[in-house]
Image (cartoon, rainbow, N blue to C red):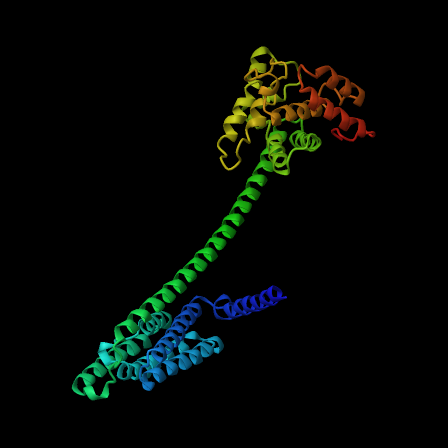
Length: 408
């Protein structure tokens, strides 16, 4: 029961802390955050000074000065939260701190022997940062002159200053300094870390947006390139997109991850991009190619690979272009790779490419019947095609009862 009660109390404290933090810091703009932190430092500093002064028996006037500062700083914090413009709250705090709180604490806490409390100086400096207005120079100058006047007056009239009577006055200063310096730097570090994390999140979000935009632009470029390739060969209209579709279907059956399937689809769309470097008269030649013409055609995988190598944002995009004409038995081109030496995406595209070639209309023939296509895939297992991938394509054909997977 005790543990449950403590957990409930701790939960309520955390909830209250989050709510207060959201009001004071989380929902505020940068300038109001800075000002609120400055006032929180002043409240904490004055409260700590009051407690230490009570514990060490300082004069009631000194204790009252610290308590007055605590109350006034809290009022400024409320004003800051409700004010439409935080500059007004910052000017109010600076004026009262310079012309009321400073002289009260100065004359009741040892004069220039006590010095200006570090927390008050830090709060004033942060308020001056927030003001960002010409009135800052007026407040700063008048405050400095007023403080100098207080020091000179106390020198001429020492009876107006309440000196520390306690023999532990040095201990008071050191204790205050340790507590308040730790508090101030703790708040600053916390604030900086939060600002860094917020900035990092903004940069990550911007980078993600740019990456997505770049990916979208690149994808659109690939679609355009694929259509350009198909338009170059009047007998293979839509070839690249169909090969991409068949390659995706095979990859899904194999069980590749979504990202791998996405990359494979892009490779398949651009597998024939090297044909851009092949003369139209050779690509569209209706009769049989000569050996020289065939050698030129055989150069398109390397040309495509070199083109796609200029797209570093699409890593390995050229795999399909370079090796989709390799054969499983090692008799393909351009590098004569054998078996699993051929990258998996290229082996998949090889089957998809051959399937579309058989199921597309050509100048010299219509698309082949499904039975003939199945027979050719069976015949090519282990020689032209990876047997596993060929079997997957055959299983897809078994489900295509109406023979819809072909050029319509």
